[in-house]
Amino acid sequence: MSAARAAAGNNVAVLSDPGGMLDVVSTRVTSPVLVGRADQLTALDEAFGRVRRGSPSAVLIGGEAGVGKSRLMSEFSATAGAAGARVLAGGCLEFDQGGLPFAPFTTVLRNLVRDLGADGVAGLLPGRATRELARLLPEFGQPAGEADSGEARARLFEEVLSLFERLADPGPVTLVIEDLHWADRSTRDLLAFLVGNQRTLDGLLIVGTYRSDELHRTHPRRPLLAELDRISWVERIELPRLSRRDAGDLAFLAINLAEPLVALGRWDEATEAIEHALDLCPPPMYRSSLRQLAGQIALARGDLDVAAESAAASRTVLSGAGYKDQNQLPLASLEIGLLLAQGRGAEALAAAGNALDRFDLQPSPRYAWPVLIACAQACTAAARAAAATRNETLRAQAVALLGRIRAQAEKLDADGPVQEGNRLTFAAEAACGADGGAGAAVAAQAMSAWDAVATAWDQAGQPYPHAIALLRAAEAAMGRQRPRWRRQGGRGGPAAAGRPACGQARRPAAARRGPPPHAPRQDRPARQRRRGWRRPCWHDWRLSRR
Image 1: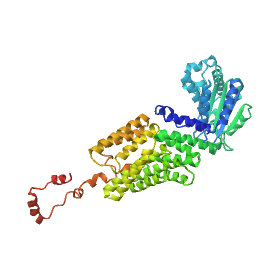
Image 2: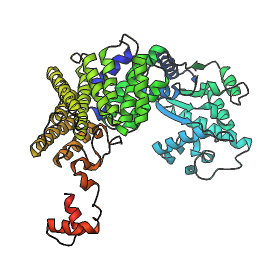
Image 3: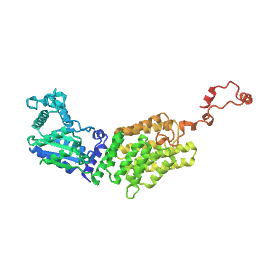
Image 4: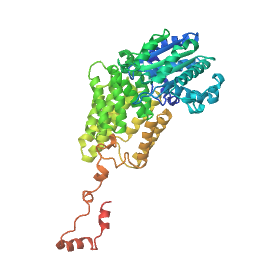
């Protein structure tokens, strides 16, 4: 097992703990382990070590867009900060007419003012001279003289040099300038000035990043790189694409990150992690798992077309031989749920039976419980469709399959809070399944079962299944298992399959047709004598609807 997977295993262990889930999953979707960048991190650490020993050092990192330059800098900045360095970072901005003048240095200066205050920054400069820094930030007062004059630029560059020199006196400083391919001429000149004078800046490491795929032969920033390359202490590093093995490790981490995000209901963040991992073309097994997670999110959102595309993509990957049941079971659960959401109850029942015939559920309880839940839902939907159409054959098939499902569940273990929540969810689904009765007793039993499910998911710290369980408990408390307004084939979810719209099947046919037309005049006397004549009114038809 690689180091990335070992670290991921530690994170997964924490994520399975309900008390630690929210602490580990941050609001920003990034891999908890940096994959495939050990050599580049080592080079940056060595440059930082040279600076701490009093030698000048600068590093330029190039790579394609999205290859992970910012992620690498984030990891290195955290390492340098933990080693006692002050990390100052700024980025160049893209504009139609060139970059914003001194944009990264303005960001660095603003952060310093926020940290030290304007007076604290001024105290670092000889004579508290900040008149030229006022060109970058208004906190330092009015700038002196003309901004475009050569003397003003020279004084500004000297003040910035003095500022970094004083900042590095108590400890090392790391200056990070990102997106140099967007740097304007003023930023390029100041950066070249600082790098060229690093012999007088003991303790300052300068790191810059740029997109190598955008620096064509006539790009105006290429002269800057050529100029810096001639300085002996400047090192250039090219960040390559991840190898296939590294992409697989990152996909493995993305799967373990996306699963708890789905349980937390943070679907946008989970989708972002999944899409980023898919862009790296991971190995087929991981690609299939990522597609399955994307399909589950789409199904929960009601995006049935997207869910169908994800299921088809995963099925294409798994069509080859050699994949274990634990890779196939999540796809089976997704396909059954998709058929139910599409209102195809009979097909979902057939898919559930096929899943029981094909797969051995006992070795993989983690993946088997969701399949059993989907199969139980298919039995319930098929039984309702059979009741609506008086199809005794379909009902008998649903009852028989539910018996097989219950027998499988009795043999299955439930380790940990998540599997226990799935076990109780299955028990609640099966309690109101194809062979269930009707009435207040059954409604009370269902309400009690879903209350237990809600408690289990609450204790497991998973808000999304907890919310679903609360909804089902509320529906059972109202004496029904699903809202009647969900139409067959709509976005009401799997349970809408096979149910007659708005409860019409429970009313007499005459009531569904509305008030009968008035009889011909010659038939009225006979009808009046039969019923004990009184003037007909709207109330008669309303009573007939009850």
